Amino acid sequence: MSTRKMKLGLFFEPSGRHIGAWRHPDAAHAGATSSENFIRIARKAEASLFDFLFIADTNNVWEDLEYYSRVDRTGVIDPLVILTLLSQHTSRIGLIATASTTYTQPFHLARSFASLDYVSGGRAGWNVVTSMFEGEAKNFSGGAHPVHADRYRRAEEFVDVVRGLWRSFEVDAFLCDKESGLYIDVEKMHVLNHVGEFFSVRGPLNVPRSAQSEPIIVQAGSSEPGKNLSARTAEVVFTATQKMENAIEFYSDLKSRLPKFGRAEDSLLVMPGISPIMGATESEAREKYEQLHELLHPAVGISLLSTLLGGFDLSSYPLDGPLPDIPETEGGKGRQSVIVQQARRENLTIRELYQKTVCGRGHWQPVGTYTQVADMMEEWFVNHAADGFNIMPPAPPDLPDFCDHLIPELQRRGLFRTAYEGTNLRENLGLSVF
Image (cartoon, rainbow, N blue to C red; front, side, top):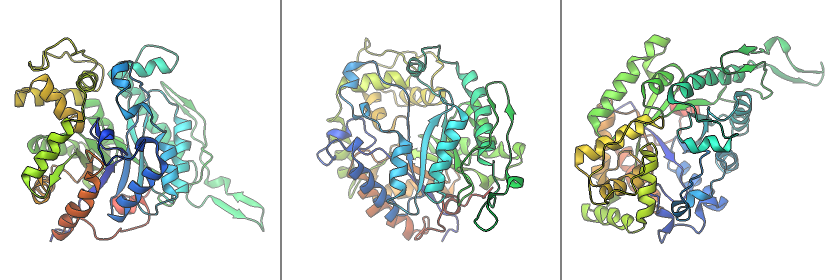
């Protein structure tokens, strides 16, 4: 049996990854805003020994009212609030939230994540993103949306400031000594005094260190600036890759950048997204895949695909015609490239492309039996295309399927844990404590 173990995160979308999954017969009513639904999912994931829950987020609100009226993404609770709730109903599973460096301030973000980390007993992580949607600018004073290169320059400095603030106190700085009257040892407090291109932050942060010292850093960018930011700062990388050979290339490229920053190969975990559709037989899995298409209104598919392609409006093009030439934009360059490459490689029409995209959004979406999906995941893992996977269940029944059928198969093969290794997220991921 292998001594190297897969890491598994659960991409937390309460109704499922498919954009129409809220219409599934098994979906909870208003499941995207139901605390009871959140708690049920989190407990199921922890019982199955997932490493973490991962919540994506954006400050963008779609202006396309036809799309907006037909998706449950119109009601999205702040992920830090959800994870704080879930921290009190779980005890081992990690809690990772997305927050943008483009439209927030470092001190506020550092304090929020340090607070979640502290109250959860050291289980928090921050997924670092730069805002890809131009619509986000309209919610923050209406200025121009920064170009891609400027967003990443700001992100580089932002992450440095946040990590500096997280290290404001040494782990034993808080004495709470009633006899001496000393609450903290000021010799173990460090004032940041950061002055840079984008930020001037004095510090210190007013939150103690947690059981894992500080939250883990997650990054999801696959562009050149994104990979450089990951190699320098990230501990987990969430990436969209559909072909194993491309995943191997990405994995090797990213790991090869680590020595430049004085980092070891095992200090960073690469975890591609996977949205598996599974059944006891291939025909059952294929039937599930086809049923998902019935939940999708064409206007939703077109709008979402247009947005993921950097805002290129596809509404005037024939649905059963080929994808037109898509110019590179200042949006999410990595995701745009993955989707366009898939359309060209598989010779997909616009309709076929949005049907494939509305579930995985450019992520790997295998369709097959539980054994076949386990075989594919094992192949990626043993060939160093991944250190693990961020699981994106397409619809509500798919999480129980994964937990009850696929995880036991991975455990039988010695690829996944049978018990948590520790009590905090760093221990369970095998990452160093600072």
